[in-house]
Length: 326
Image 1: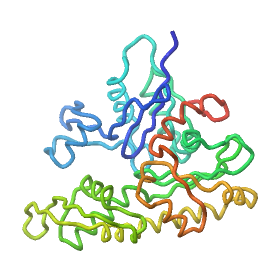
Image 2: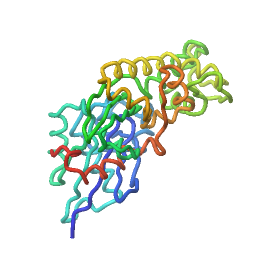
Image 3: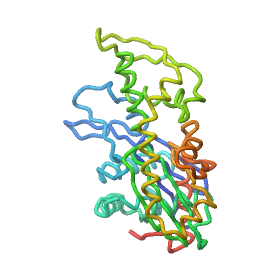
């Protein structure tokens, strides 16, 4: 009997696991524990429900911050707890884990994560290559492929060719920066304080990267600054979409700066092939059109942008040159 092979996408906002070409779980990348006893109280969605609703003895930990592994031990504990929901973690044959890791990840943090996950055998897969495989890009061909992975904490721009990441640039602006823009707009324009979770919901409902296409309204609950009491305010899609333009502009400028260093031969390929958007942030309505208009380059969104990395990590194991052994 062979060990089960599981791929992991450890993101700032979500943790995904897949096997056999199917996503097994998708949970918030959060763990709650008691400060006094150090006991784990909740993981994933259950931990997310505790944000802003618990006393000072309970901390809700985010092990990945801005796309980088900040707490390897908590990340390992979270992976074990969540995987135990879908497989027998205590069986004699421990799973083999293929973990999609950013090229900018700290190698020491990665090794600490893998040590904490023992006796499971872990393999690090370059995230850009995993996402490219998951998006169906022909990364083995001798021509340039461009991938823009818009996550929650960071946006990574990668150029790939012949199973290699030729260049990569990590931008510290992504989905959470858009959430914060919504939160600040409501604070300044309506004197209403929203939680980041509510701001994210507003973004999903009303956010358009191209304001001219904005339509719809939504009335979230928040805390009124003056009275401190709960209050509901009607927001429209146009004002929210306009609030998103500043962080969207930073993403576009970051992509442009990353492409400025691409060799001339590969640059011509990018015009022919276009740039592919992956990651949960790629789901923002109109983002593809916004980037095309701003940068005057062809863009397209992968079929399943939020699961490209986790599904592609297992595909990458078929080529030894794609996998970095831990």
